[in-house]
Image (cartoon, rainbow, N blue to C red; front, top):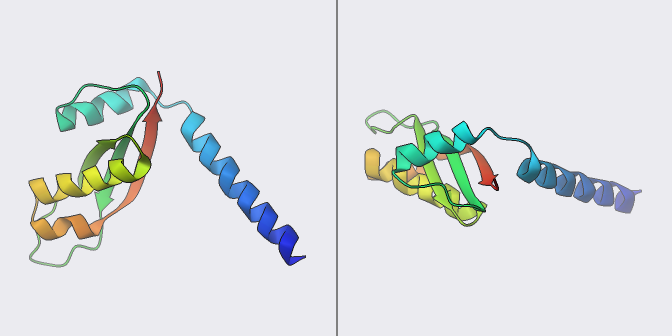
Length: 105
């Protein structure tokens, strides 16, 4: 029974990951992020829109941060750099709740 549950969980994770990459995202979503970053759209790149969360008092962070990269991890790390650039250096540790999509058009 445990093996069946583990296999089902792995299939669900794989299925949601595949759906996330292929779901239709309006080009305008990517254009807004690219404009915020001052870059052009690049095919097969990942674009991230993240929120800064639970920032302690005294730290000035933008509420929404953006990133781009060749992988999901690079896009999220780019968003952390954006947070530190446009806010206090500590902001990069409070980046979370990211929507990361692949531009494939």
